[in-house]
Length: 102
Image 1: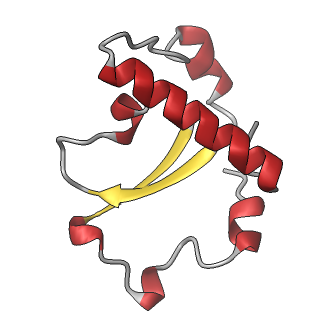
Image 2 (image 1 turned 30 degrees about the horizontal axis):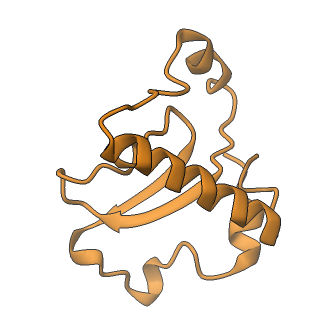
């Protein structure tokens, strides 16, 4: 499932994957998904992250680790102090999220 597959169902699935990954992380049982050489090959042409994470640039909370996700699974935007100015808003419309194809 990629960001381009928008809708409530896709959002529910993305949240479920994040919660499941966080439960693995907090139980110290990470799966380390999508970190193979084959996955790196897949990502050469294009990425299809299933979620966008807007978070702090604090190095103690890397989203890929605390949600136990792999390469290309998350589109992470990290900003200092969690401040996003009007001109910097990347996630301002559903249209922008639904049409992300990198």
